[in-house]
Amino acid sequence: MSESTEIVQELLETTGLDKTYRTPAISLLEAGESRYLRDLKLNFTSTLISEHLSAKECALLGLSTAANNQNGPLVAYYTNIAKQNEATDADVAEAIGCASLLASNNIFYRFRHFTQKEKYTQIPARIRMQLMMKPVTGKEFFELMSLAISAVNGCEMCVNAHEDSLIKLGTTEERIFDAVRIASLVTATGKIIF
Image (cartoon, rainbow, N blue to C red):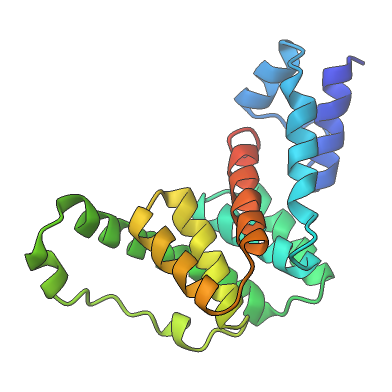
């Protein structure tokens, strides 16, 4: 067995997928004996490691990002890890809901930002956001998930607004940085495992 195949199998075992599972991307990396496979595995496992976030928070950030990216295998993986770390069904549902809500917000506010027309800022958004009012995971953590998803979706206006809210709530920049780091690595893994 080649080193690449061993790394692929370790990565798949970590995610709970069968060792024979392959996507076209995995097959191409494996056939090319890509050194990137080792980086991918290490980066993916680091999504659950943070000095500034709890294991439960890391898993919920991973879950929200995987849901945002419509990645079934990673949604299942992070749901399992979140529940192992005492996440409730309500916590899990909120991470999924956050991804959906931010998808709409990011499109809408990106449009407003891109057009830079005053008229569009005067028209009511008519997007219900009750989920943001009293989140079960807490206001600070919901803002953190919102920031991470906004970063993945590339909404500058939302990223700035959520980062500003977090700073005002007393969140450290290290905690913010780790949330975005996790979202970026979950997204990268999702390009290979889907």
